Amino acid sequence: MRDEELNRILAEDAERAFDDRIVTALERKPDLSSAIPDDFAARVAAQVPAKRPVTVRATSYGRTAMWVGLAVSMVVLIGITVRGSASPAVVVVEWTLCLQFLAFAVWLGVRRLREG
Amino acid sequence: MSEDLSFEQVVRENQAMVFRTLYRLTGTREHLEDLAQEVFLRLYKALPNFRGESLVTTYIYRIAVNVAQNEWKRRKRSDRPLISISEETSMWEDRLEHPDRNAEQMMEQDEFRLCVEEQLQELSGVERTVLILYHQEERSYEQIALALSMPIGTIRTHLHRGRKKLRERLQVTERRVQCEMKS
Image (tube, rainbow over all chains, first blue to last red; front, side):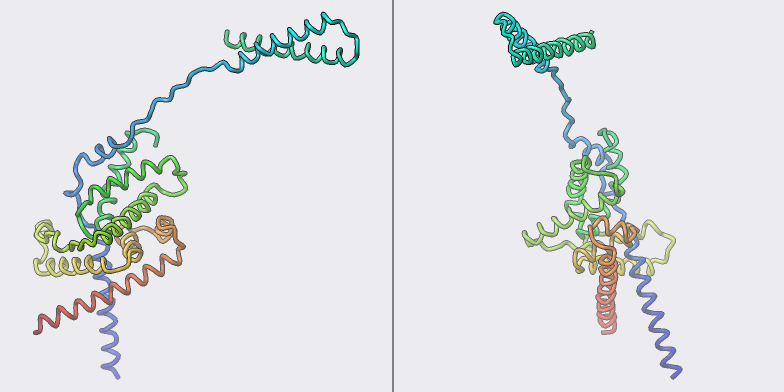
């Protein structure tokens, strides 16, 4: 009975020691310093594509549209005034166009002030 | 990480880790430099999508594991035999590093280590990866789970299973060596 117990303890100890040897072997980091070229990092960084410079071209589509709008509303306003109709519908259209014309003018004026 | 200079620093800081992980995952020094280069180039491409939720190292481990997996597939396709680590490693180099240690003991340790390396290559890819990340790289379960996109429970299972398989195979090898020595 004692021998059995002793054998069991010895077997357990041996197994534990064997596991420790495996873990030690696994934990040992392979030394690869000789396998890594000195300039490895520089070479990898050189392979990275160079960043393209970002170019931004200023456009003036909005301003052109505003000038066109201003011109069109002025022409229509003159046209309506020359015809001289007094119907309420025409008056409403006339006032709307007037407001639109003013809005265009203010927008362009503010923009010009900001640009100096 | 917006400048190339910092990318070079990232490479320099992590190159040793990438080389040794790839070495153990693939089991050979062959193409190691090319594979490591691929890891870092993939990292660079992936950096704009990196949201800093995990460590860069965890991200690098994930890429290294993917690159190693591709290498395993490539080898399977070309049916190239694996070059054993033991054929490439010079034990003399190691022994010369520690001249004060008992030579016989050192040789025994080295032989056992090489056995472990060889048997490691016989495990499944995921078991090998988990064992390497846990023991060699000292990563936590959480970090391994993040790197491999697997639940922590699965990582634990693979680690336990991998260690068990490794132990059983090494015991068989040891018994065989002992029998050969007796006869």
